[in-house]
Amino acid sequence: MSDDGDPHDEIARLETQIEALAETVEGCRKIMLAAKVAIAAGGLLILAMILGLVRPELASLSGATAALLGGIVFLGSNRSTSDQALAKIKKAEAARAALIDRLELRAVDSGLARQDS
Image (tube, rainbow, N blue to C red; front, side, top):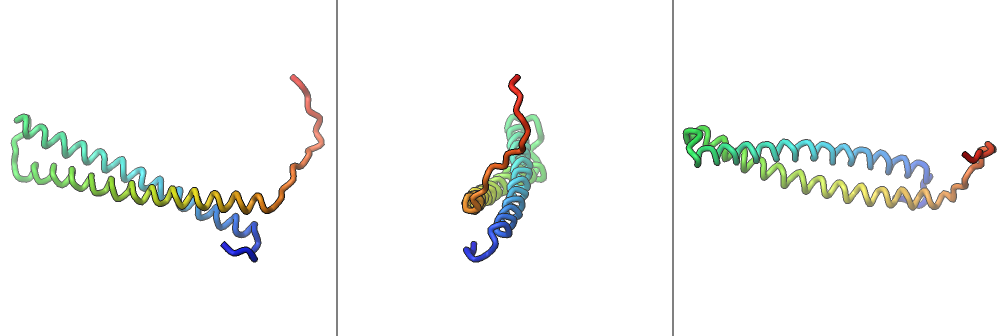
């Protein structure tokens, strides 16, 4: 953030950055949901094999293991990315608020009479 630039331009840049980071967080949330579904599906299939409800064949065991482990990896990776993006959002929002405070904005009276209900 430069001190010699127009604060309005810097605020607009920060708002664009915040929106992009919010999209990243939303994408991570969707992937984390899919990862949780994969973990549950893999775990249930393995449990079904242990209980004898499903024949423990190599293909189903491999698929269940891949879903379980892949889900764990995707969940952890996207949680980390989401946490980093949320931290950047907080930092950008604080910078935006500081710039807005520096503008010394004044309240504008609309001239409309207020009516008490």
